[in-house]
Amino acid sequence: MRRSRVAVAQMAPILGDVEKNLALHEKAAREAISQSVNLLVFPELSLTGYFLKDQVTSVALTEQAPALDVLRNLSHRVAMVVGFVEEAPGHRFHNAAAYLEGGEIRHIHRKVYLPTYGIFDEQRYLAAGARIQAFDTALGRMAILICEDLWHPATAGIAAWDGAEIILCPSASPGRGLGQAEPFQNASTWERVIRAYGDLFACFVVYANRVGYEDGACFWGGSEVVGPTGQALAKAGYLEEELLVVEVEGGALRRARVANPLLRDERLELTLQEVQRILRARGGDPG
Amino acid sequence: MLDLRLNCDTARRVLTGFIDNEVRKAGFERVVVGLSGGVDSSLSAFLAAEALGPGNVWGILMPYRTSNPESAAHATLVVEALGIHSLTVDITSMVDAYFATFPDADQVRRGNKMARERMTILFDHSARLGGLVLGTSNKTELLLGYGTLHGDMASAVNPIGDLYKTQVRQLARHLKVPTVIVEKQPSADLWAGQTDEAELGFTYEEVDRVLYLLVDQRYEVADLIAEGFDERFVRAVYHKVQASQYKRRLPVIAKVSSRTIDRDFRYPRDWGR
Image (cartoon, rainbow over all chains, first blue to last red; front, side, top):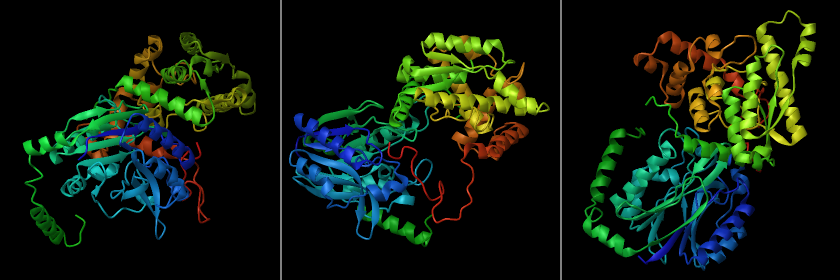
């Protein structure tokens, strides 16, 4: 893994306006380039905004969409993770994030777990992705998991077992449960989860959350980059836009894996065997 | 589990940010708020003054001839503390003119009419001043349906609708709303001597605990009874929430087409904003 400067664009996308959001991306990318950033991670659905409802089909882009050319071009100078609604063949619409590098899209992750409860309604509008896969980049091996994906611990496990050194997590997390915790109850849970993953999987976790308001819901920000011992290496403020920049390096990852060789000792056959046993016992019942 | 304490610094940031964002997104920079002299409208005004600047907030006082003079005095305290614009529109002549035709109308009809008269004045000033009407209904009264539909429940943006009454008081203290307003007995001031708690038959402290567990913490009625809450009280609260559901929704539309507003025609309120 190469020593590199990673940044999170903690921004507030404009709901349903791809053109204006492209301009915001371009601006953030130019700022990141001026700070010698190698990888810039945008939040979930950064090109469209989150609570789209029936607008999903109107803002969708195919992988080849010319609208993305400006970002493809910028990716010669800074690699980027960008969130968008992907219109896939067969007119299936996905909550997706693309990894752009060297002038092209190198990988697309389609959100696997679409939350449809409480404030969320994703399965009504979107199709679920069917793959969790790490991929190689010029900076190291990475995996993308979008927001809710990360609340299912197996996804982070799969990413790590597939060799990811950096888990990239674009997110659009609306604050819920304003009480004593700073800033929201669900924000505290997020922070515990991503730090635990950094620790357990001895990898970097880049959590890119958005800010701003949609229909009264407030996205809390607080993006952070977690190191392979579970510490937050850098953290953005809550509720405000920010470009969070931090340097990551493979030495820290190596040391963490030497000190705590959990990944070496992982027993995937055992996991698979037990998962298969559980599935057989359920007999097709989702449990 | 049963902790209604707020992190007031965060609440203040989130709610002032909300006002600023939702008002500007809609293409406005001003708000119009009806000031009753109570803690809810005072808190809304304090938040708006902080979010938009006092010069962008219009507090409208709308007394009726039987209103308690203390209400206007307290509303004036808010206007002076914040340095916002203010205006008094006495609603006596219009309300009395109407009830001259219906002299037998009871207190409830008269109270609702006053609330709706005030609503029309606020929305008229919304057009006159180019400002959105700021909501002043809290979560407790919205859930209980303790408000007048299309009256005090009407607004364009409501910063305090997800705060229980006891939380409104916490945040009001934090923002330094005058103590006399925070500590007085809440009243709709629709007739002499009216207080919310006498009319409802319980205190806000009591009902907020039950609502918080029922709504926020997803307790079933049976769970609350098992926890030792008074069964009759819990059922009465549940019934009020259920019976007032219609006040929290748009009018029900007979579905005949292939795509019906709010059923299968679903866009965010912030659509195109």
